[in-house]
Image (cartoon, rainbow, N blue to C red; front, side):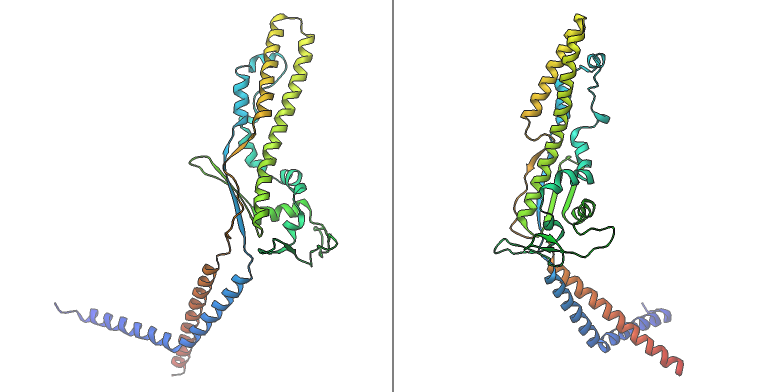
Length: 317
């Protein structure tokens, strides 16, 4: 079967285009090689400049403490309302659901995390020595010899980083929390240059959120017991006395559960560990991407240069 004249012309044009493209690449090969090599070197230098980051990760399950308390109280809501108590859970949400939001809040960081960490480890760390386990701080920010902050600052910053500034850095660079929609497990991650501090902070966060809700529920339950004891003494109706006595018994059960339940809000499926291998940076990937970027940029430059001069020649002719 013979090709039509149009098909033959199209084939010839394609061959010319491919030959022209190959000619451009060969003509600009030194530009392509030079720019790609330069970009690769920059990528290598940049990747080596980045510090190693270690990630300590904990997989958590909801302990559902508030549900256990509801079971302990049984169907006492109606009787409690007669005695002037509201035993329903806040907004119908479990402690673990509220704790997820709490962990992401400034107030929790400021009151329950920040007081228990060494602030320079968050805001002034320069590097971690893997051989000596020494932490080296940025001398322009923090003087480790005198234990004083020396950084330059302007409003709204202060010389010693505030809770809000520290919280922003903590959330952006160190803390992560995500929930698996399929099984409901939570993954809490802490990233740091020191794998020891990464694990320490992960443990601290989980212990603090468990302690926060334990103390909160314990305080509320103790107040309920005090109130019920007062009510039982001033109530003359025997039926109401029996109801209040039953409420007291259930509040005692609740207090017992609060005291004995170790993992009050979250329990470990897999606890955080001191990791031996870094999680980032991906130096090989950075170098490959730098080389690809340099290669594409140099090829683009070679084509622009070729067609620019070609256009100028056509205009002159």
